[in-house]
Image 1 (tube, rainbow, N blue to C red):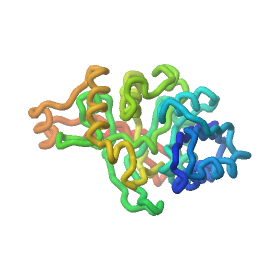
Image 2: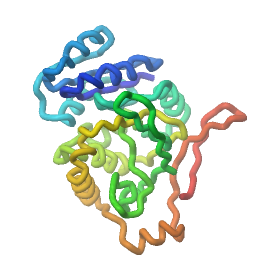
Image 3: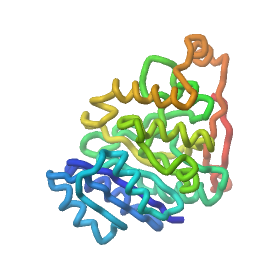
Image 4: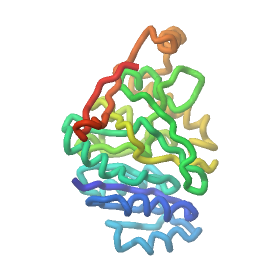
Length: 274
């Protein structure tokens, strides 16, 4: 099973090498593309050091992060796809775990984690945020919006999300059109139109907190765009009554998880009500 990974980058030299290594040190067949937007901070030299192991790389002006990701994916041929931003990192063994699950369960079209890593500025694991799981109904009811005071099950961590190429193609094979900040959130809405999201109970990747991310400094703008993306697909923020019912467990959601059976040593698909 071949993994196609794209990393978009622009002037992230202080984090880029760690991001690249977190991909290249994974086991298995990897088709890795780095799309740099013409950085001037030494990023090009870092990419050049890894060039022999890259399927493609470039350093030139582009139309932004999501334009770079879409054009990068257009060059790939792998069975499983994902992107990793240049300031984030995968967890060791993430690709092996994902490959086992995709190979064992054809029903799993896209996969993420319930155990979301937070890296600090220096790349140390600072926290793991546990999310109970995800569901299509919860997503379109606004329960997976990334921030706010409303009831939330938790957001989908992009750095830990993988999908089959067939799902990418069904969903339009592009990201970010009309959503320059929350393109990931809008892509998940399109994915949910075709398949439920499964979450494995081990870490796959992590988000690095350093204060300059789009979802950091531009959090309010990101949130507004995420809500607009949700509305564009027929969803919306949950009502006050719906939130009250969810908080007090008068209403439950069925979420899909992948759990390891310690007796058989195999992965199992489970439906859990949360």
